Image 1 (cartoon, rainbow, N blue to C red):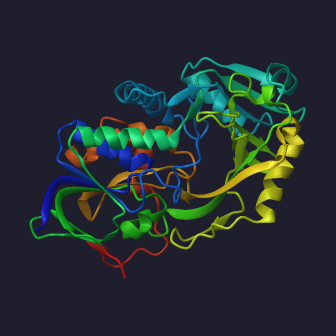
Image 2: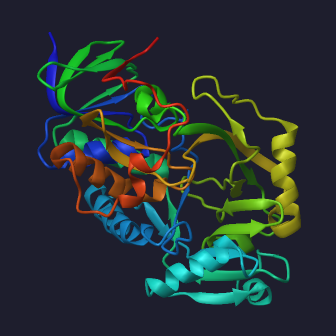
Length: 396
């Protein structure tokens, strides 16, 4: 017997779990389908910590979304009864004309965000764990911090279930089709469902679930490392803000030592677009190599020497990149009853709470009060657009 829903959310990672929560909270009869466990370590929403920051060099239009994200994370904490956000402040640093420093400073100035500008000497005096080049300039914004992603996902899904959502885990979507009555039929390896609206939040699998994203949301292998600190006091959350840094080796990001479960995972960091390895989400190389470790350790030994102790852990995850590294939040032009959240390009989790709200808006109303002009699918040019876009998807 085919089950019927008002909305189905495919993928219950950071974005999909939030979308399911907002839909269920509004009284929508919703089903969430997750291919793996909830949470899991196969995609992009694991790794103990995620940065959240208000000083946003990527584009000024993100700041209103971030303000709303902070409100929604606070609401979620209160509803779940567990702390999910930890304020450390944030550092955005690089040479004076760099995108990271100048863009973050502009973001603070134009949005009237509390901030301080520090040169390299001032940064080292204030936060001795940082040992950056003399030309480095930094923006310190006190409201930055970190989220605990696995618990955020758990909170969204458990609360969605309390509001009446149905949750299926360990179930793989095999295809979907637009029916004659404009509803959507979703086929999985466990059954068939019919829904008024379909919300695709497939992370690195997004383009496999929505062919309109083929070539526009491209997975990339990413590696994170945790190093034992030689001077732990310098890397405690109160003395070592989360950070983004632009140096001659590239753009990096990192976290203080964070001890949420009785163990110290060390100083965690990574390099944006680690070794620039585009991949397939189903066949990504999850092995770890000496080259991965050397790339990351070399950075730490140069700029964070007191944190560059032995390697404690390394993890493979995935970015899903668009060509301009801005998100896709939109309905599909050939199937407006299907909406997609994709291409978060390594900087999306902090906004998962508001993305969930936006996706619920799109599913219910086809529009949202939030400014998502930057995130419309039409801005991205398909490499080889099909002659007739499909009105559905079937796994082959």
